[in-house]
Structures are given as structure tokens and as C-alpha cells.
Amino acid sequence: MRKRRRRLRFDGREFLWTARIGHADQPDGTCRRVVSVRVTDVAAPGGRALFADLVSASEPGPWGHCATDTAHPTPRDVRLLVEHALAVGWEPGVPGAPLVLTADGGDPGLPGFRLPAGGNAPG
Image (cartoon, rainbow, N blue to C red; front, top):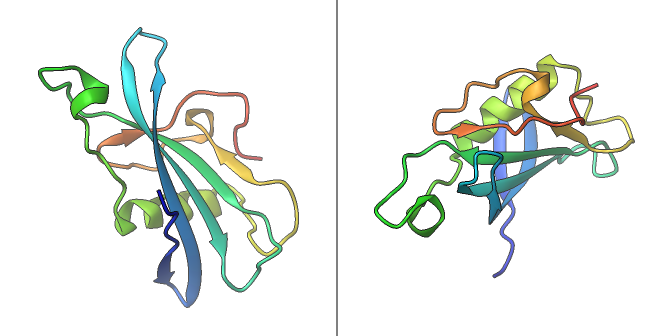
């Protein structure tokens, strides 16, 4: 599948984002849809990127979570991610390793998604 880069503009800034759909086994034994979102600042092409794996929080269909889940982030969801990342210290114009958002770094308030727990909390 072709990767499509989308534009997000707000507060005088412009970002490019992509989303890749996958599935992952969860600690509770269920399979969940996971959408891997990658964001970069257009004004800083060599700057620090933002990574977030969004785990679908939807209820399972008759064939389970992975078989029937169609969750996908909207531009509003990505804006909430970017605003949250900026609030916890993401500096997209500074070169460096990507910032990986996890639940350990707080909740960006995405309806329908949650961030996984992990050791790569913002910072």
C-alpha cells in the first residue's frame, strides 16, 4: 500500500503526517488495531520527528477486534497528538531522535484510541 503524507496546519505551523495500519497482540490476550502515526514539521525537515502508536479502543465486532476494527485517526486526532507533544516538550525544529509518545507521558485525550505503555516516555 502506498504511504500518503497528509498536511496539518494550525497556529501558523504546518506538519506532515502519515499513518500505517497494523495489528498487535495486547497484554490481555486480545488482538487490537494499531495505527502508527509519524509527524514532522514542514519548516524543519531535519528536525525531531514525533512517533505514536495508537491502539484502538473500539469494542470488538462479532469476529473480534482485529477482524472488524476500522478505526483511523482524523486530522483532529493528529492535532491533539501534536498539541500534547508540544506541551510535554517536543521541539520539532531541533535535530535529534524521534519523540515516542507512550501512555507514560500522559493522555492526549484521543477519542477512540489509547497510547500503549512503554519505556520511551516523552523527554
